[in-house]
Image (tube, rainbow, N blue to C red; front, side, top):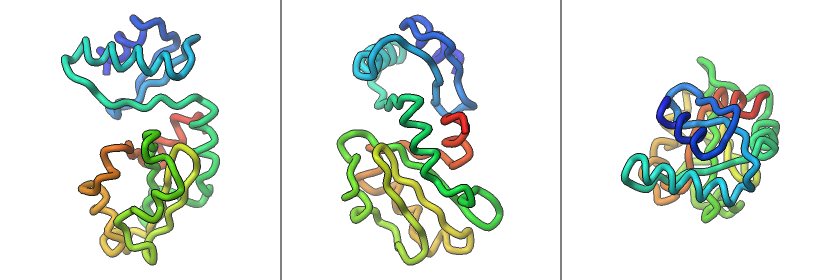
Amino acid sequence: MKKLKTLFEALGCINVSTYINSGNVIFESKENQKNILKKVEDGLKQEFGFGIPILIKTEKEMKKIADSIPDNWQNDSAQRTDVAYLFPEIDSTKILDELPVKKEFIEVRYIKGAIYWNVKRENVYKSQLAKLISHKLYKSMTVRNVNTARYLAGT
């Protein structure tokens, strides 16, 4: 994570910080989202020798996604809540119909840029949520637990 922070600083980003070992970087930049995305992709490829798919979300986008999650959706002993940030190629309400989960055991919602779900712990296996990892859509999303999503959004 230290290398990641140093790379972002070298790219001209300021107030750079990382969040645990999740690959999440919080930063400020005067660049627009498209330009900074290109710079970061190129910088990561140069630093590590291979391309790494990345998403860059604005503070406003992160907050909107986190704010859409019901307050009572938590990660605790009774329930599990996650957020899947979507790459542009799958960012559509249609994704809800393509998910390999049993919707009678899990509640899944869409907001531009993400899907998020809540499942009772007793229904995690019944929901077939684990099948998502081997599904074609999984390569075009990055999943974080609700606590991380809320932290990154500053909520």
